[in-house]
Amino acid sequence: MAPLPQKAQAEVKAVTVKVEASAPRMRTAVVLVLLLCQCIPSSSQECQTELLENVDFPGTDMKFVYSPDVNHCQQMCTQHPSCLFFTFIRVDWTKDNRHFYCYLKRTDSGQPRVQTPLLGVTSGYSLKPCQTNSPSCFDQIYSNIDFPGADYQSLFTSDYEECQRACTQDPGCQFFTWVNSLFSDARIRYKCHLKFSWTFPVTPIVRKKNNVVTGFSENVQISTSQHLLKECPNKYFPGVDIPGSNLLNMPAASPEHCQILCAFHPSCTYFSFESTTCFLKNNPNYMTTAAKVGVTSGLPSRFCEQDTDWLSVAHDGLDFEYSDIRFVVLDDAESCRRACNDDSNCQFYTYVKANSITSVYRRRCYLKRAIIIPAPPKVTKLANVVSGFALQKCGIV
Image 1 (cartoon, one colour):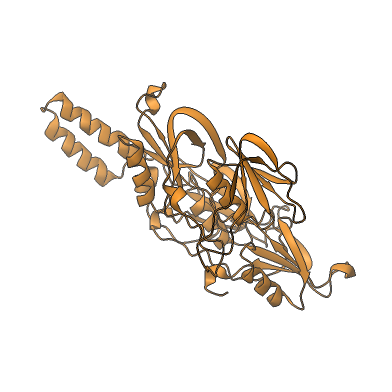
Image 2 (image 1 turned 30 degrees about the horizontal axis):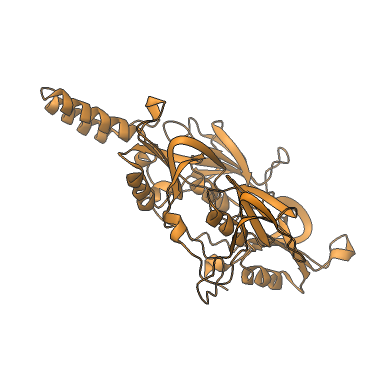
């Protein structure tokens, strides 16, 4: 937990002195304020935008993810709920094969424990304290770099620019890899691989649990098409299952949540929702249904305006586990929902009621987020290929 800044410590000390002789009720209020401040480490961090070339922040790793360059790595750290700083291993690293590793890090103080010189790496800080919404525009082209995996469609194009245009025009495509005319396998020369990653915040675990309430920020962007023609008719089949053809099993809070997940995934043709699981399915040829109590199935709606009313629904008895940014102590779930709406970093929340069995967690409002920038599952060196990102976020369609 990060300590309060010196100025804040001085102010708190002065307030404490003033109320020392006051009623115990007032002293309790001051203690609660102090506890609330200590629960928000990000508020005491400064905005640090500089990148430190050939400087390592050793240790304190939470995890590593793949990034093609340091700017993408910094955005990954910014969008990760807990990351405060990072070290990125560049393409010119020579000690081993860990190129494109983006190490996400944190400490209770919010600062690296040590900084050391190291060739081939660049370090920096999360941009969360900067209070700016990054457009996530990644327009750099990466020659001889592959984004393996996450393919959902391929076609042949004359050059990488046409491949990038195809990716940009497809709402499901977030990045691509194109194979040039010198590639070793002549059969796949000029092949353009369109690739997917989640740009809608995915809740890692949805679990039934007493005395908690969960929900989403109303600021979550759920448009899946650049050309919205009209409001989508939400096509659901209550009490109906669509067995087989499973593509992915995803945690979800409701049929409406499940439908949005299906709409965002370009390979999802229809879905079935049961309990807290969303079964995304892929079969463009047939849809066979069967009656089943407790299951709701439906179709995705991609090319019209999405219904957003479900974002304001609070789900009593469901917990969105993990992905915490921080928590604040509030009186009720509605206050927690408003706090999430007011925080530009918050995408979803869980509120613990005052009657929770574990007293230490009572009245805690956990603000949460997930990474939604395009994120290749892996980045590797590969001769005679070109990779890059879709340009929708750059204002190019």
